[in-house]
Amino acid sequence: MWQVRFLPGALIKMYNLHCHSLLSDGELLPSEIAVRFAALGYKAIAITDHADYSNIESVVSAILNFTKRWPKSANIKVLAGIELTHLPPEQFKPLAKYAREKGIKVIIGHGETLVEPVINATNRAALEAGIDILAHPGLISDEDTKLAKKNGVFLEITSRKGHSDTNRHVVEKALKFGAKLILNLDSHSPEDIITPQELKKVALRAGLTAGAIDTIHKNTENFIRKKSS
Ligand SMILES: [Zn+2]
Ligand SMILES: [Zn+2]
Image (cartoon, rainbow, N blue to C red; front, side):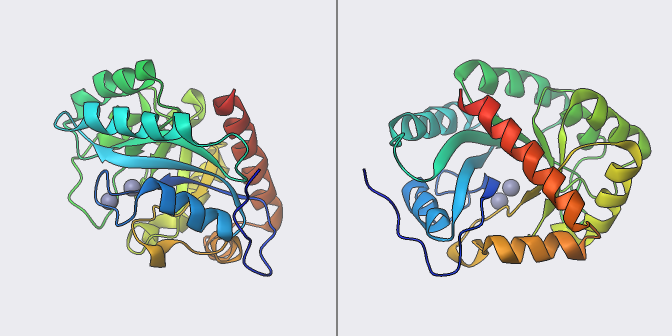
């Protein structure tokens, strides 16, 4: 059984369920993404390329071809994902349903970040569409935070520049209304692939306590276990 060699000093269990590859606007092949994350001690990733009606069939089939053949014995698990991005709100439901039926494990909705012109009411449409994670939800409202809790959707705390401006807001709302949080990188290039220790600092800067971070890890682990079976 082969293993990716760990870089020294990185043995913390960690996860990143938001990565972009050459299948959309990322710089690396899925294989190189997996190997680079494994080298930093990550235990599981999801490859979640941007999709709309123009490319969803090809992206879904390509990532499933990849993840089906990724060796079970590897020391990093790779889940097939997709990020529904900049859709007219009414398209979230049909595209989430399509991805799920094809066997995609992690469906992300590209939320209302303040650094891109995302259509208003995108957070709501994504939360109602059966997604797993609402990425960078910007200044998410109380109502939408409650909906995330009700529908069991993770709200994302991100290390990505710009999207991370509203991390504190997302933490406050999620803690207030009991919605689940997840820590993700939204990586596109080698420089974005930070260590688990650096990702933990992002979480602390967002106002999360060590205890709250532990809870996030437990919830994420449970989610990955459920999606891997
Ligand atoms: Zn992107
Ligand atoms: Zn993304």
